[in-house]
Length: 123
Length: 158
Image (cartoon, rainbow over all chains, first blue to last red; front, side):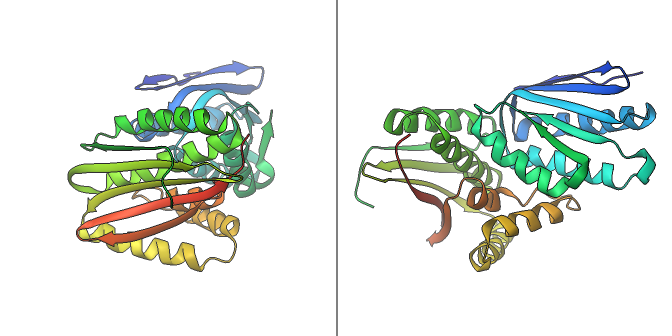
């Protein structure tokens, strides 16, 4: 499987397979200069999840120091793409957060409210 | 707002400087208020309104002023100035009208999130995020050819 990774400006991302699931990480700062790279990473992550018939993609954000709305939108688009898959191809998305980074609680709560039962937040 | 500690910066638009200024603002308010959720909210607001100011600047100048009035609670005010393109000023007017008329900032923010999934031109989320996530009041005013956008709120010490 061709799993995505990137290192652009202040943001890094990677992905590995964990059994039948995918485990991805983001670290650094997700702001406007990193938006395109993040968008391409998430598109490839989504495609890898679909190709592998994955049940769960876990995205570890514990080393993500900040995310601006320009990059937040990338996640909104991703969750929309997941919801638009046929029901039997939809996978769950679990965001792993760091409670000490207060912005994550607020931003991920909003994403969870948007994403519905396909989205989980783990601290 | 009576004057307390403040920092006033002007710079030529460079989107890469926004994160640097957010970090500077975090350090400034941590010094004033102590670390914690309040500073995280202020940093988010600083980043969002400054990123907008830089992105939509017509001619190359952006200014930001961050202020803190000590008290119990203290009061935080962040202001940015730019000279926007006319079409961006219209978008700002429309977005601010919607934001001010929204009865519930969180419900309105969720509506913006639903809308942004279909947008191809920016996220349109920044000001709604400041209102809902940072829980700060957002305003704008015209000062000649400059537009000032402010975010402010009372904050208790951490």
